[in-house]
Amino acid sequence: MKKKLTTEEEREILHECLHHKRCEKLTRQYWNLVYKTVEKTFIYKSAPLVKEELEEVHQDVLVQLFDDNCRRLRQYREGGGRNLAGWIILIANRTALNHLRGKDPHSIKSQKYLILFEDMKEDLDFDKETNRLEAREKLLMVLKAVKKLPKLERSVFELHYLKERSLPEIATSMNREIGNIYTIKSRAIKRLKKLIED
Image (cartoon, rainbow, N blue to C red; front, side, top):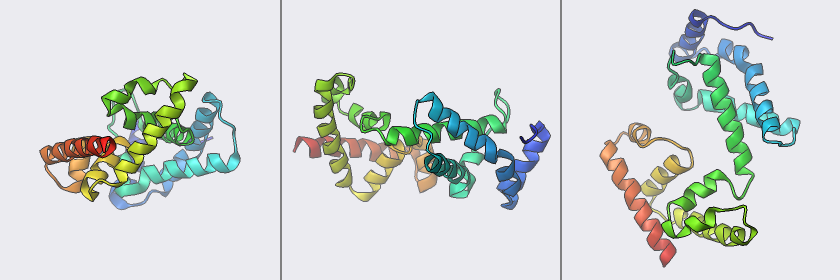
């Protein structure tokens, strides 16, 4: 069991990773914490504890932390009642939950697609067996329609609704004005509705 780091030690280990690209210490320090968090999330959601799957999600969390020039680690802000370990636990928990939802055809992520369309809202009660098939069919229509969007609209739509990036984050990553991203998102939704109606 790794000893809990002081705020100063956390600051140092994070600085080394973000500014000098040396992330070995951070990885070693939080390796077991990430695994335990993933395992606890699986237990909490009554998911079977399959070693290979736990390891896969564990790796996904590390990818999340270090991907895109350590974007997730750069989002960490000291204070506010959460230390670096708490931030990493949050990311591990979300990654595990997203993994488990991704296995469920009636997942939250799927519902996010459907909620865009007012006339589909009544189908979101997946507990009612009669609604499930119809909701699933409509979801498949939406997913097919998303693939037909122009590349830029599809990218913005998927980043926002699937990867849960905020519009300002998308604007920054695409090097565009925030207003432009709002317009693209709005255009994508209008086009999707039209594709589905057609």
